[in-house]
Image (cartoon, rainbow over all chains, first blue to last red; front, side, top):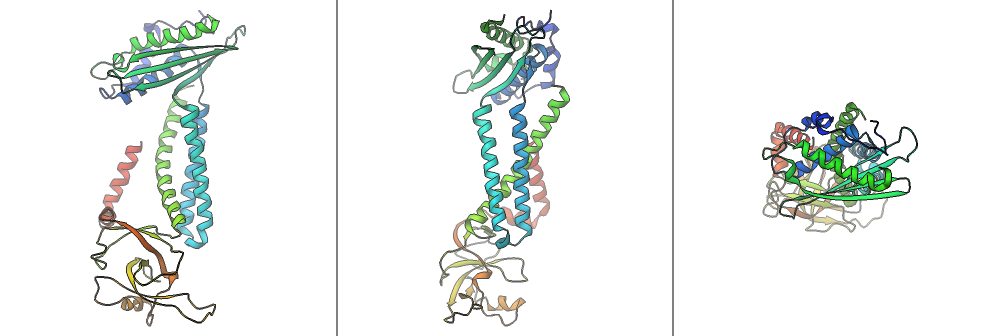
Length: 206
Length: 175
């Protein structure tokens, strides 16, 4: 059956691309919540892209890369200029490069903290028939390290035309990993697909 | 998005991490230079000539003073032809009364607290007959210090391989 925003059917786990994809993550350090979280975020991106056929957006990552390289060029260039030219002659140029570096770094920091924030992925699915409006799905994550079993909070937000829907899910991080640090891929796949289905269904597109 | 694009983006991000660490360190140094108006805002004491005030390995924080230098000020100066700056105390200040354009605002005589004699022998080393230094040769005045922190720099200068190892470890950590 064709996947479209109106009938989003993810393959069952044995037939999914994730069944083989997840092996590239290997084992993570046991009880490292930082590594657990990053592995699950990478998994969500893989599931969205390869099994649910969303086109993932990398716009803000690409902007950060460009700005980061620009800041590096300004910083390293300004420093080299300051080392090669006597101090009193180069002071104005070095001051300008320090200010420019701080400005570009501030923009990059703003993007990381406020625009990208806790977002894991943003993807879009377009109805190949063109009947239904495209669905844009954004996934954000947060980890509550203060809770006894370190809860993972996921927020799925879908928009289809004028309709919005949001589903929040919480699960202990550890339930998706074995004691040796291997991802329990089938469990996580089924949970993520169910949450995404719920979210998209609530936009009225299913 | 194909796997090659993912790997390329991840590689770019890792390279960027290393570049940002290097450029941040350089910009912090240059920013400090501009703020303190001196090309070397932080220096390490290499000898015992200023003991007991400062010992080998102490980190000194410099700034260009807005007001004229005075007797008792501890300054870092660099003589023409010498690579290594010297940190000593001002022993005597001579302010010329004539207002020629060529006249320096001050002439300074310095001495290490732990040295038996003043620095005129050092001045005359490269420039025979030189009896004073001028504020133009002064990199900055000492405004503060951190004891022993600069020992790492001394060790890295004595063992350059250690510097390479530390930089390599930093790059690996960033990746």
